[in-house]
Length: 321
Image (cartoon, rainbow, N blue to C red; front, side, top):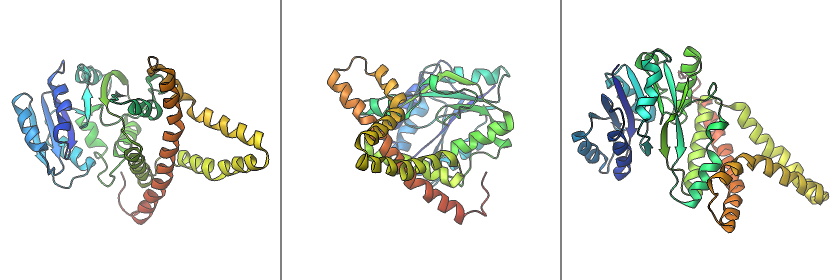
């Protein structure tokens, strides 16, 4: 079966090279690569054109396209029966394409989940990756929803669910996954098909990332119970604990420290494994960052989610999925 790799880019510049280099070194070279540029104003298009001498690369330009629109335009142009989607900013494991399309080629699946892992460059990024990204043992393959940085599916399945939701700017891959799972059932998870990507390098960019994710959740009405629990925790439970600290200091502090410990336990376990060679002082600083990162992410989500809900209310007559 013919395999098309698709991705979207905009103003990636030199940052697009690692992805393209990793495609060159795949154990199975794709039959074609379709990259949709959303209107880059830097040298992204020149770099893409350079790689056409080494890869079966076709470039399409759709100025102003969001990620969903870019993916849909790329898939429309693709001639392969199998679509393997990835993203700029990642490096693909050498056997990524071969492994992720195998269940589809063997007739065992219509959609296949790939895996993703952090590729940190700094100590802060090591902590960020351990805090916000699950390890393989943390996920249930039957419930796992793949990021479109590492997923493969039949083009007919994409057509059957109406493609990526073009009305949604963030969280679009989850809405697409949910539509596919509703139609075809759970997807097999191929955890050897790994896309490596760099975690956010500072709290500001992390805040912006999770704000937009939560805004997308609100627009798509995703995970309302999860967001409700977060609001109850910070707006109801935390004030009660702070009042206890004021009136019954020992009990209040025990509850607060116990809650923080429980909330940070799994990230701390992941970080413990990935910092085995660090000095004790370095580890202490790293573990101290976990509750800070979680708190910043929670605040970002609590601010972004109602913005998305407000958008949804004002666009409730628009077709959604």
